[in-house]
Image 1: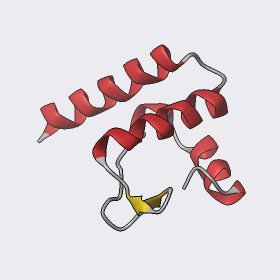
Image 2: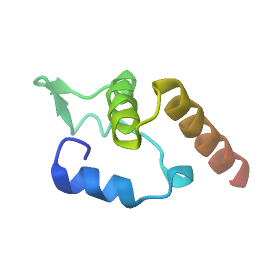
Image 3: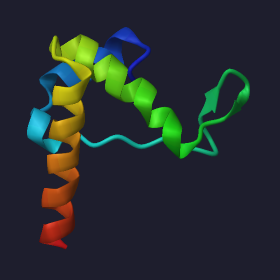
Length: 73
């Protein structure tokens, strides 16, 4: 989603406190192999670039989002 222009534009329109990452594996491919859970680090890097934030800030935001979701279930 973060590779294409349309996907990047969609992400920029999303509230940051609602964004979560996922690998989409085994259906998504990265370098010819199935995406794995630790590949979400690439998404974090892309979000940091899009949001003009350090990776640590994006990591913290994503962790807070997941925690809030987990507590609401």
